[in-house]
Length: 344
Image 1 (spheres, rainbow, N blue to C red):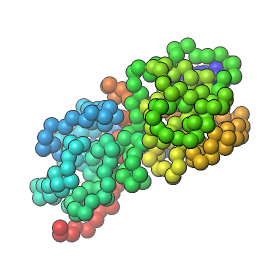
Image 2: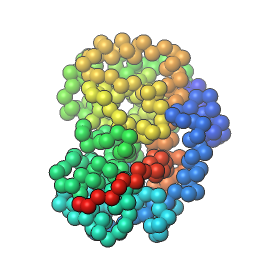
Image 3: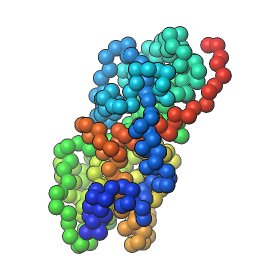
């Protein structure tokens, strides 16, 4: 990370987000974001239905979100003052169990029927597909699904569903001391799991301008020696927040349109990340990355550094962290369409 980006980070942390981001904001709607965030903190309420069985999420992002929600100020015991309703269930629940759950919500509470579940949300780490059962279909089609990025094609409904940012393992340590102003050693850096088949990866391994770790270490030194950090969509993305925090501009290699990036309602991903298809090959990718002009690149780096704090999870939730930003996305969905009640 160049000295300019490091100073930008220090400015952000010392002056706060309002002033540091006035010139270069990572937010889609910077004029209203902070005001809305404060309104959310003081007014937003969530009612949690009592789960039928103990809930245990093994996927770290889902576990962080669930545990933080239970301890948060947003939970209310008074369903009448709730803006949204959380439906907790085990991630391995069968379609039959989900259908029975929705029937019980409809029969035992008045809230589901008011919107057919549109003001309800649930957590399912992988998400699930549509089903023929009418009860599960309502849950899938109407309620907000919270799943982990990246999602399976067809399991995510844009503009309704949201994704949890990945949790960066503690073992992936970043160097404590920022580097100097020396130019990056590599154009791009990729942590490859050694298993995901990709023609582009094979080409990148033969190109001296790219660093490909096929046996990634627990140290992300390659991030700070590269201009761009490459991610295979659907593979290892756990180091995305850490890479962005250092100013390494993310390049997501994906062969279909995606709308499930974390905080899509909040962050200007189109201005701080590059999406590219694998069919371009290493040569096409190199041409694309070389074509990013110096000023544009520095701006992207600054936006990445500013946005990274919103993708980080904490054992105890902190302002503007991943948990609070997920709650913010739910808050944006609190105004739901009141469907006419129909008999099932």
